[in-house]
Image (cartoon, rainbow, N blue to C red; front, side, top):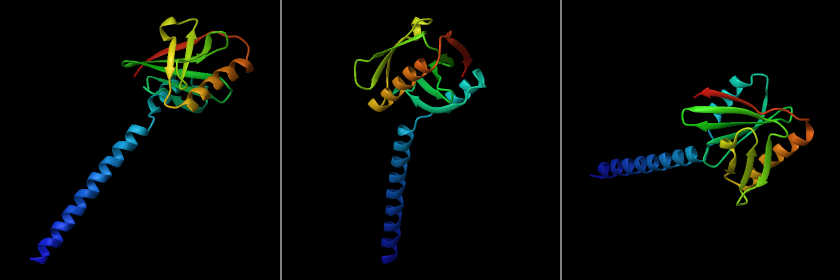
Length: 151
């Protein structure tokens, strides 16, 4: 009879550990920013640009990339297609968003991409704003470069 209690206790502990592990894995999946496909597509569209840092919006529909030469790129998800673009001075207007963790970008060459971009934290929104403002201050003018690629 005591052996049955040992087995029941072992099964109970294994079950509880499994439930805990599954919840921990699910929480980790939710917190993780999966910018891998965006990095791959941006690398295909602009192979000579080296990425320094990546920040995704809260809905993960847009990924902003800080490049090594102080340029900024972004990747917009549009269903099964991604639009990769280099943001050049004079082609984007940076404005504050409706909340602390939002930034409004007005693209002069693409009104459909303009709008408010909401980030997970206020720090991410400020970081992307500084990337854009810093890259625009560091370089001269240019055109907006957009490349569409299938996902």
